[in-house]
Amino acid sequence: MDKHSDNIFCEYTVDSWADCRDLFKAIGGWIFRGQSNSDWSLKTTLERGADINSTYIRDIPKVEKRIIDKFQRRALHYLDKLPEKENILEWLSLIQHHGGPTRLLDFSYSYYVSLFFSIDQAFQESAVYCLNKDLVDRKGLETERWRGLDNDNNFGGREYCNNALKEQALSPLVMLIEPFNIHERLARQQGLFAVPFEGQQSFEYNLSLTVNKYQKALPRSKNINSYSDVIDTLQSECALLKVKIPKSLHNDIRKDLNLMNITSETLFPGIDGFSKSLFGEFDLKAT
Image 1: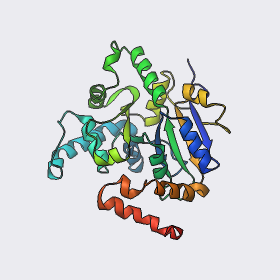
Image 2: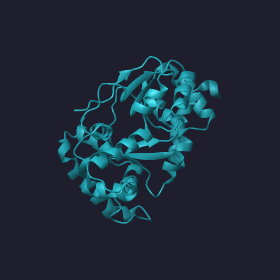
Image 3: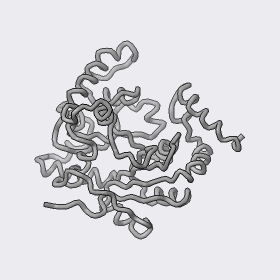
Image 4: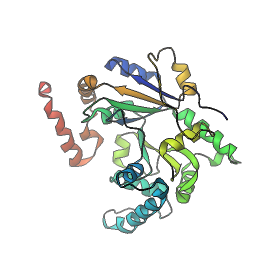
């Protein structure tokens, strides 16, 4: 049975803002997700909701079906334009956009945007999870071929993703995709979704079996002390890189992101984003 590469899941702690920027520039083409606590794993809001409510993970598809059905029946009271009923990806995108629980996991093409979400209102060391998009897409296609895919052109599109979402519990896979309708917040955040196909299992279970069809769990992250000598290895073997951001660096990063106009006001449309941006007023030196 094939084991995971030793470098499939790596971890690095930056030692300065410059070090952080240099690392992200070195892995261009990856996608990124900021989390305000470096101890947190990658979990969808459906998973977190199941944890909070002590719901058995195998029952999540039943919960998801109820959520989608309820949203579809009531959304007309709040939204002027609705997707076709069978377009589950678009419905989940709307639910995610408005704060509901889904199996979608938000990522961004921009590491600066993800850094913002990592440090914004963080109380401790935060993290940016980096997903090797080319590797995950390639390994996903290889895994689906092994499972019987007979036409590569059928893989990777919204129709393929929607068919999996309708089934709710297909063979484990993570697909990286954008919905057809890019709402304003998703556009501002340069966002896309990582979609796990097997709804009865965790996101990380799906990711593990995407990159290695024989392994149901990601190994413990491998700590790297320097990335400059292993960039080629990361590009060819690492599916997931966890970059830890010490709390001591947050203010310097926050100031530069503000100068780039990456704030709650620009990432969240409307007065809600503007109101969130007022947390920046605690930086008295900026006035």
